[in-house]
Each structure stands twice: as C-alpha cells, then as structure tokens.
Length: 497
Image (cartoon, rainbow, N blue to C red; front, top):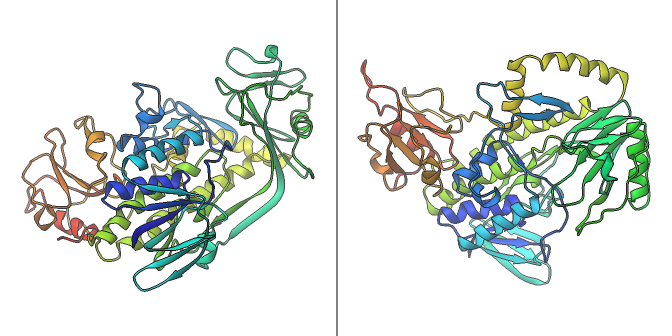
C-alpha cells in the first residue's frame, strides 16, 4: 500500500511531495496531463514562501548564482504603489521567476528525493475504508493508499468526489484580456515603461487604474511583453484575439495603442477570462482525504498571493502527515492543518476582494481611492499591508506551552544573525531546538528533534519543521528554569517514542 497519493503535479503537489520525502515518507504523485503545461500562469513568488524555499535550500535553484533573498522596496496594493523602503521591518520578499520554472525545479527536487511522478493518470473515483483510501483511475488499475491529497486545482475532482462543499462568491461583471504582443521600440522608455501618445506613461510590472478599467504592462527580459486589460460591463464572445485585446486596451487608456503579434518563440498567451471566484472549502479534510492549494481555496490573483498561500499549505501539511504515518504525531495533529491554514486563506480572500474593489472604475471608487491614498502616507499602514501581503502577520496557536512563552511563539522564526547556518539546519525538514545554554533536556523527544548549540542567541527556541516557533525559553531565575514549558510544547506537537 502506498503511503500518500498526491493528485496533481503542480507546484503545491510537488512541494508536498518534497516535504513528505524529507520526513521519510515516499509519496506517489499522479498527474492528469501527460506533459507539463506550457501555459504561463504566475510570474513569480511573493511573501514568506521566498524565505521558506531558502530555508529548504531551494531558493538558489531559482535565483541568479550567488543571490540571497531580500525584501522588495516597493510593491502594489489595489493598483496603488506601495513604498516599503522606509519600513523598519520589511517582510515582503519577492522572486520573479515563471511558474513553469518553479514546477520544473520542484519536480527535479522530488525525483532527487526518490518521489515517483506518474503522468497521464486521471483520478475518476475514490472509496474510503477505515485504514486506507482506494483511488480509481481512468483506464488503469486502482491504487490503495493510506492518504489521498487533492492538489488538483480549483476544479478539484478529489474535492468533488469527497463531497466537500466549496462555498463562496462568483462574480461575472468583469472581463480580463491578456496576451503577448509587440510594440514599436520608440514607445518603450529606458526603464521599460510604455509611452502611449494621447495618454502618457504606463509603468512596467504594475497595475494602473483608469476611470475605464485596469491595465498592466510586463516587458519580460528576453521575451515578448505581456499586456493585460480589465474592464467591467463589456460583453465578449468567440475566441480571444489580438484585435479584441487591442480594442480593450484602447478603451481602458482612452487612446489607441498599436499592438502587433509577438515575434519571439512561444509559448504565447492570448486569453480572455470572465469574472472571478472567491471560495474556500468548508473543510480541508474528509477522513483520509485532504485538500491542498487551489483545491482548498480560490481567489483573485491580484498581488500574486496564490503560490505563497499554496506552497505554505504544503509545508504545513507535509510534516504533520508524515508524523501521522510514522506514528510520531501528537493527538489531533493532523486536524491543525485546517485550523491553522484556513484562517490564512480567509485573510488572502479578504485582501484580494478589497483590492478588486479598489481597481474598479467609477467616481465612488475614485473617492475611496483618494481616502486610501491618504492612509498610505502613514508608515504604520504600509507596514500592516506588507505584513498582510507577505503572511508575516500569521500567528498560530501553539497550545499550552507552560509558563515559558515569548513574543516569537506562534510566529515564523526570523533570520538569526547569531546563527548564520540556520538555512542549512532547516534544510532537513526536522524540528530544531536552538539552545544557547547547550544543556536543555529533550527527554523522550530526543530522537525526533535536532538539538543545536546556539551560544549567540539570547533565548532558546523550539522550531517546528515548518519554521514556526513552538516554544521560546526565558532567562532562569525567580523560581524558573531555562527549560520551563519545553516538554509541554514538545508534547503538544510530537508523540514521544
């Protein structure tokens, strides 16, 4: 019997496969498509996931040689420029790399770790038993597994077969058109901006709102530029075309923009999308079936939160599911996947819906934007938005950890200048006890946790495999020892051998 079958070989499913393999579980990945999709979807990574990939030693596989993660000095919120350069703690990290490359890297890493990926395998049914789930496949023999994870996208077959409700809202008032194009060289400025006669400047890699809609211009290095336009109340039918895209851009800008077909090698985008969905599964688990990424939540793509949310779902689920399979899970551990990650999905849904309102045309929205623009002049507001967009505001309930708790408990472990090899230590995916004293006792949990002397730290930290702090020590004294609460915290998350 297979330990875990993962339906879907997108970034989220592959990341989960890597996490399970790190923990000693060998999952099987099933993918409906016979080849990776050539469609260009996400253009990069935004938020905590950038540093999480670095903690697993994967950032260097996507970035330029020698590059290290760093916060971006500027971003966007609802087509507003978001200046972050003056924030005392800027958590918003980005890595511009196409989703196709992310999938390729994760697939390569999964294979290195011994994961089997089978393409051309379409899930058509499932049947749950007390100790296993049988996965039925189109034209192939069924597969029995201890668990099935649906990472098969917003139209998830696994979710539907499990009869998990997907409540939310669908709006069809907008139409988005996007395509790779060519423009006259004299219309592109030295910084990549698009200079449109009769309108002005369209900055690169930003959303620009007008009184008629939204436009985005993305002159990717080494390839054809991508332009997109969003309108409201504009019907469309038939197949998407360059002429339709050109007309839409002209209406949004109020000026003609000559657009030609792309001239470089493909694959090229030419698409039209109506409206959008914001939906969150009413449960992330049904017996031995769990949902991951877009199978559990869909939302607007504005601000690029999708991969940040989905990949961190995978990191949260991976170590918990592995612990369940290997008999190391504390009671109820697997249920914390939903209790921790569903609220994060709700926050992403909240801020993408808010941004979707801010980009709409109309005088009432213009008034709202004027007020919102005044608020953005305050650094505290910009800090709040940076924390929200990155996921740095997440704080998990770490349970009864005894009297020795601290401000980092429940939060993602920050980079620690006193421990420069933290990246190497977390690449194994094992829990860590960072111990300045070198004498803290792990007790019965010693086989499950790596204890690391950290004399440069001023406090001891227990890190879960997903790099969230489960316990923080306090200085000894006044009837306390430096390890007060450590065993309580260990017992909350790990079943001692």
